[in-house]
Image 1: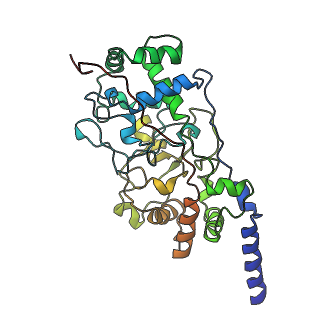
Image 2: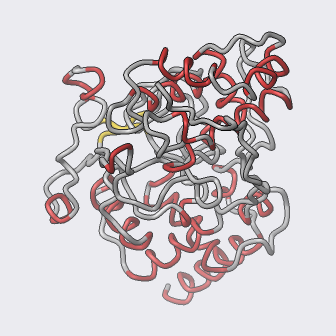
Image 3: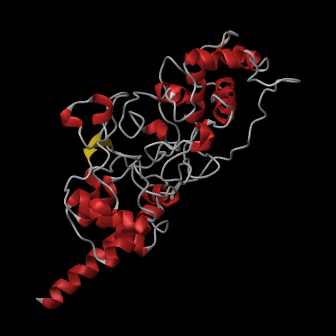
Length: 346
């Protein structure tokens, strides 16, 4: 009987290394391009405008914060801080989620309060802790005063008028280009069985056996594909009461409840993408966990009520590293100037 069990283990490992386990079928390669709304088709001119706006700190009240400040596309798409810093050095209440592959998510923000990239782009501009503008009209007025933006809006929208909707549409169009396909896992799923090492293959199987795939499924590892505006949420922690609750303050943030004030949404969060997760420390909505290995342990206990051994943690962490994709090259844009004056003149 012992010999039969050993043979079974060897046979199973062989299947894993050959890539013919049913487990691989639970995952999908990341598409090369996300879908786009009919109301905001992507064009090169719109992307160019959106990129300039994304990097322009003049969208903030005092010129100190751009979209890229908190969602740095020269790195993992966030800022590496537990809480992001806005105007006047103020700290927000949640860690910045990555902008890479955000186009594959059906809702935005940790609590899903924005139904689209377009709506998400508008929020930080008038958040008093983030970009700090009193209203969107102030943003539009400032951009109207920067002469070089007028021809860019005309090229992007076939009209020179600057509106907040067009600002948001341009930024969203640029963000839909921030896709990282061709990870080791993507290559593996497409037939290159040498793309994953043995530890990553074991981790892929553990990801399913432990139960991680129940939430982190689909091409973005953020749940099933849903219509825009319909979010995929999960309670966090699902199993409160562990030592991690106090150590990492897991129950302090009430999640989606803050946006909806519905009791059913208390401690509910949008399931985040795991694409490039090895590059987006610190982890969780409050950035309280500094390493991916510890995040794996916390998730297993808080969400699945399971305690992992060191080998499982190593293999799962190795598998998550296989979700790091190929980043498109990013060049800093030349922003429209205001010769001889400041954009913040009264």
